[in-house]
Image 1: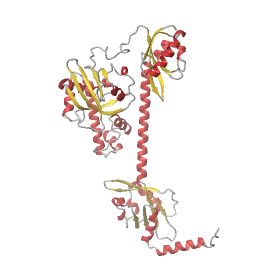
Image 2: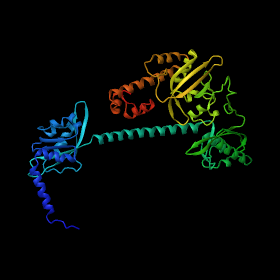
Image 3: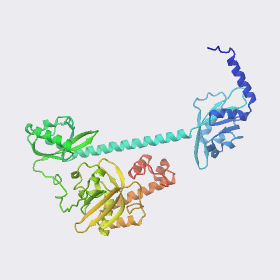
Image 4: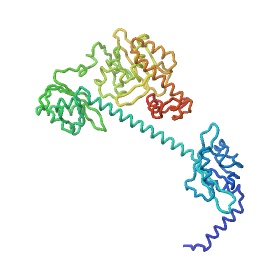
Length: 478
């Protein structure tokens, strides 16, 4: 190891001293500026004698005009006390510095973290600053993300509470089963009353124990069939452990990669006309074959109830089988509300054929995507055929788009007498609310806090409305 020179530390001090004598003030601030964003030399009166910065974005804040001015006069009013504290002689300064703001007309404030160095005998105080604009933007995005997450979590909890309440209060006896263990995961009040009485509890019990011994093997076979076929399985003349005669229906569903089941029970003799509904026995239906069409297609009656659908439609709405969609109204999947689909049906009834109608399709697992609809009304059978095409971009369409469009006004007018006035008013209020929110975001350059204040809303309420109208990612001019 090479021995260290005995006077190397003293030599370093001498070099620094010579460097200070050699460099003028301009050279000194330029040298210091290599490791920071802004450098000021401030005299004992607090005035800036020299400045240095490289970032051209700072020109808008007039940093090059600060020389000759007091530093406290170059910051926003709330930052003056921080500058006074930083320049006070003998005051111990925090290591993280003082965060102050510079202002400029038409620009957001420029946040800078300043630290100062002074020494006895030194004719000026060296003030160095680190620009924090990016850090402040990151903090703002973090706060907005936190607010959005809290709102999403609250909405999720509220939705969970609503669905759990609906499940518990439903008059139909429903039991959710673990497909592997064949035990009860959830059971509503009607199922508990039917199988265990008012004081019973079905959670985590093997489903076999809830039924008569002679029917347990038959129930086990039906569970296996429902899990692997994907089709609803019906069981007649099933007796509970209490001796009650029951009819049962088993349906499989996916949960966390496993096939679990919903067991629906009712007393023998009750009928459910939808259990064996097909395209052939729906009342008033004249089904046609849609499987040869190259796009997703459905056929409905004049009220919008499905008579027929092809496999491509089942893929779009994530429905395992045809029986799960037949007999249900198309508004369950198409349109943001029933009014949207009613406008299309009203126009199809008048014009026989409608093309390029813009709408939204919701699938059975909560997803949404924009679609374009073409409709044909068959006056002989009173049915409507719909062709559904997912759209990648928004084409020219005749759907309910511009709130001031002639097509929309005609669409609402055509529904008078066909749709309750309350529903029409509710739909129009949603349109007006969306217009106002977009206008506020445009006027505030997408500043959500300012837009909420302009609209007289809390920021939380604004985020909820943005999500409801699909404006979370709205940008002015888009």
